[in-house]
Image 1 (tube, helix red, strand yellow):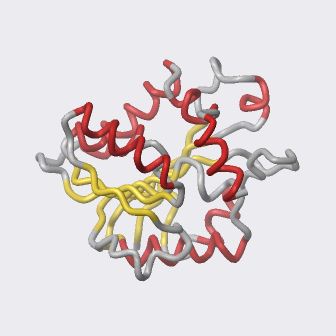
Image 2: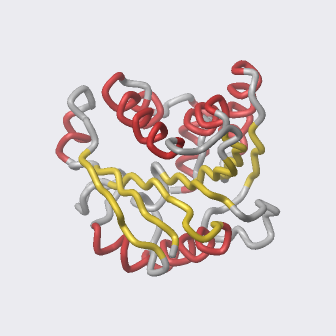
Image 3: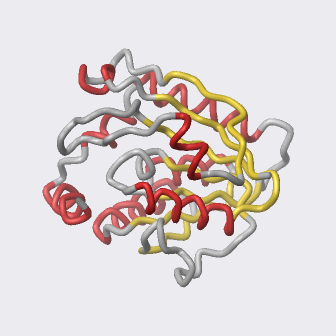
Length: 205
């Protein structure tokens, strides 16, 4: 699958990113970001986008006043993210790396907000999910929040296999799910609506 993502970015076929730009989903994520900023003063703190892709959400967070680092394993996606940040006039630290093995990636630490809008529920095995969770725990400060999107579990061929609340809790044992809500997929393709995507908000113990 990692090779598949490299190919998809190469040919410019990234439907998950195009879908993220749809009105209802973008508005919902904007509201999630508003909630994370509530009660804080700019600069809000350090944010880490796990699997940032072309930087859609990393750049939006940076524009809001977060100090953002984005990690992805696809070089072309990171180049697109750099271009996106430059066009928006914001700074985003971009690192080529595997979200399941960030020990030597010089990502930093003390992150107060983390995002995973596509990695955890997709191609990772259960062991890799646990590795991602351990990496996130090591990089996050106490009381940090993680926003994670996941489809409901299901067999979908090349599409994401999904993750249940129990799957998330098992991997992120050092975190507590403090909120969840259904994604507003009303304008998304039918296969996405059938996957019943949800946003989970976790807090680091």
